[in-house]
Length: 65
Image 1 (cartoon, rainbow, N blue to C red):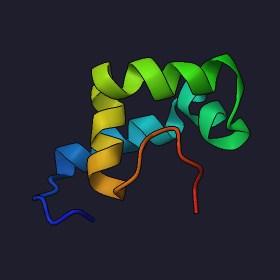
Image 2 (image 1 turned 180 degrees about the vertical axis):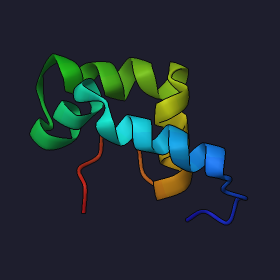
Image 3 (image 1 turned 60 degrees about the vertical axis):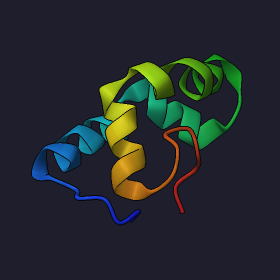
Image 4 (image 1 turned 120 degrees about the horizontal axis):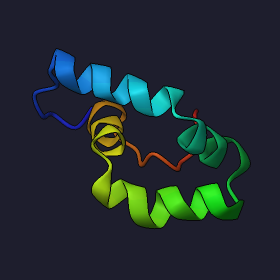
């Protein structure tokens, strides 16, 4: 965690990112169109990706630990 206040809303939004088929594929494969999209576009626009970064402390396209 980054020290920011993480609300229940942030956690719900981050869960949507975990369930998103595009983000899920980007995290799993680390290549292709889905990876490029999440890395270059969605991270700046998608509220779910932003919440994921806030809650988990890593970008939505980075693989799960």
